[in-house]
Length: 340
Image 1 (cartoon, rainbow, N blue to C red):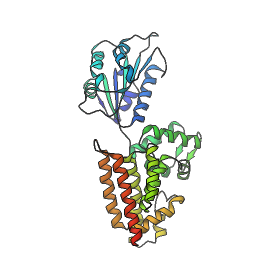
Image 2 (image 1 turned 60 degrees about the vertical axis):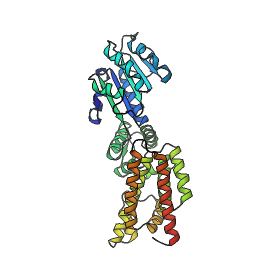
Image 3 (image 1 turned 90 degrees about the horizontal axis):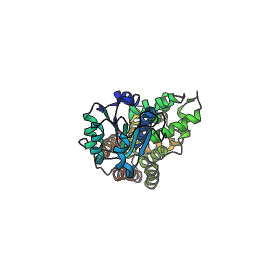
Image 4 (image 1 turned 180 degrees about the vertical axis):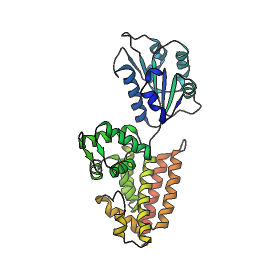
């Protein structure tokens, strides 16, 4: 069966109802999180040698042997397969057609919709196919809120909104940041916008924001350095696009208020959350260089860049570097010509 977000709890919370669960997609952190939840719920532990068999790529020839083995303590066995591919479809079909009672949990990367493993998992009522892709927008906000609730930490709406636009897209990276913030707040504590900005000041998310701000103020060398740092720390080009679109949107909002007759200081006060004090100078430099019509055009270009990154086979890293370098070059040109 193909499982969507609304039905996810039926699988993760009740693994005894399934014989085969296939986890596939681009978000390796989310895949590992779901696999860990399934194995722990089904077997009671991740490292019980009598109940859990972990098969790396080099061990996958033993899949049928492990799936048909009996548990020595009478409980249900779990076979946890890493780096799975369509080459395992024949063995998995034989297992499902036989009497084996083990649960097989497979972690795979991106699989084609017509691939053998996905077709097998989606065509059977005793099997589940779960796509794991980077969360965005409200979906990401909801996940972040739940992670804080699990740790008995409150977070303000401003802080939550800021986090949703600055966290990376990989689930493991998101969870690591939440762990750090929850430790800072302490059980029963509350995180405000200033707290999360302070705690994430040296993170990969901050590197993305640095690259975006430097690009719009025309610092080409600084943009390159900040972007490479962000990418080396696991930032995703789509996440870079989202941070950039958020920054452009805030610049557009201020320029529109100014065009309507407000002073710049008053227009800046309308932003929620407000511009972080360490970024105020860079934000004002960008306002000097980008009038509203140029920002509208830049937003359209950035949306096209994000869409290109999401296309199958796209050279997203190259597109990302080229897009930010182009913005920095345009801003530098505007500064030289004395344009806003």
